[in-house]
Image (cartoon, rainbow, N blue to C red; front, side, top):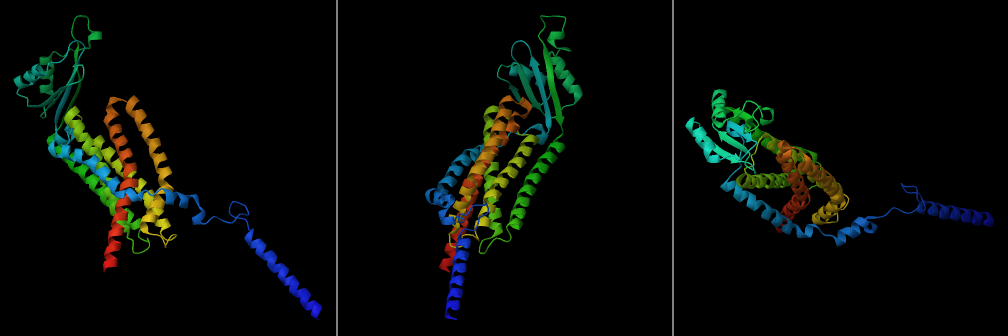
Length: 362
């Protein structure tokens, strides 16, 4: 009986040892027999120790302030140079094949017709002139054409080779009431977009672990988005004052596109923060935010760089009609990439840190 018990004991011990080996050598998801890496062994954890992006959060916000201030000053002093789509009025453009336009002579022609002129601009070589006036009718436009010597046909089609070809390239008129309505609708579209973004992010992050709040995530994203809008509008205010660049409905379209792109980049980072919060309960919020940025940094930069390269090609080789629309998008994409990484998350970290300190004092 003793030998049988001893044999049974040895058999049970052998089975236990084999079971232990099987557990230690069980294949992982990729089919290997190596044990899965823990967070302390991962490359991401080592990178987090050596690259603390959030450490310089106040510097990032200071850089943003330096970029925004010149634009805000320009907006306060000069505002945006709006097109007739917003202000109402008429825009007439004339070009000539020989010589250059004299803006004083052009102004005198309009004055003789009792037409109020708000601006007369010529291009670089002076062969094209653009006149902005109060709304005028087609009859008055015909009188202006006659006074400026506009030819019925282009010079290359004329029988007189010595004639100076002057043609009207465009004539647009928008009533003041329509312009005001366009401006109101554009501002309404921007307001609705901002409000919708806050509601969406608040709802999407509603299940975030306490004491964190989805509303704070949404407000931080909006502040970063406002940064991008102010950067673009400020630059266009400066361009409008120095170069006469006008803001039209295409500019509003560009702003709405920038808002969407900026929020998309921000949500990528914030969503990773949300996923990491329950994983690393023992870590501080700043550590988790920094870790999440490092996880998404390469993706964000790669996506933005692809879009920026495409827009740069359009800016260089595209037509003049989309030049400033593409420029606005390009500025917005670069600014949006910066703000989603170096503005939105730092703002959220600072906010959460202030609330945590306040709760500890209580």
